[in-house]
Length: 124
Image (tube, rainbow, N blue to C red; front, side, top):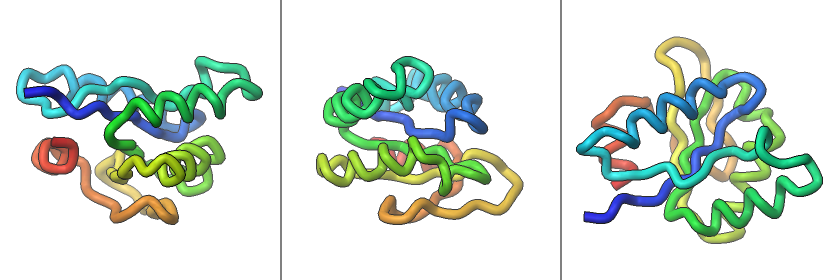
């Protein structure tokens, strides 16, 4: 069975740890998905970032937005969601932490709780 190719979008300035957690879950033997790329702010100068992000999103089958307290205002995440919509790549939003108040990003679908059962269902 092939694994679904997922691009992980997250608030680089506030929630970098969420990317590591998702990558860890993707490595589980029973994981139905693999992380092929993630938010690129750290990997590309600002002027090259949009082209690299769009290319990575186009290679993916789904964009997973890891939502923290400030994600709905994160410029890079909002751009990645817009790119995914333009490219026709489905988007799933998952709350990244147990406690707190979270706002779904506009035009990115429903906000789901983060647990293994949800990830397996949403990303398979």
